Length: 91
Image (tube, rainbow, N blue to C red; front, top):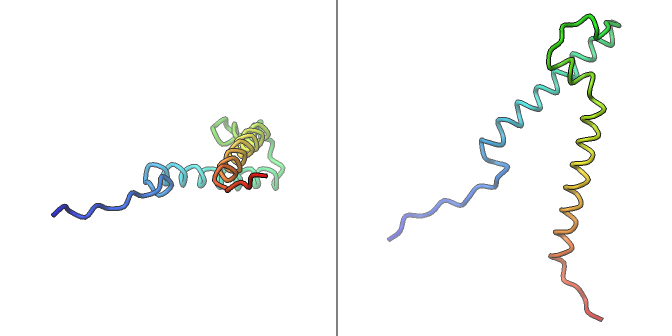
């Protein structure tokens, strides 16, 4: 008798994906709070020490463009996959 095999977990439940994603999300949450405080108290970003948070705050336009492009590509691939699985009617 063979031992029962465990079903394979999906890739998005793997710890190698969840841990970096959670770090990334917390980092950007902290970034948004920090930038909000800077803007609320009218503190110029030039007077704050240069660190990754302020670098990302200065380059948020590029991150939005990158995220939008990635989302567009992924949605395109998703719709192509759906269309390939949908049965077609032949006329």
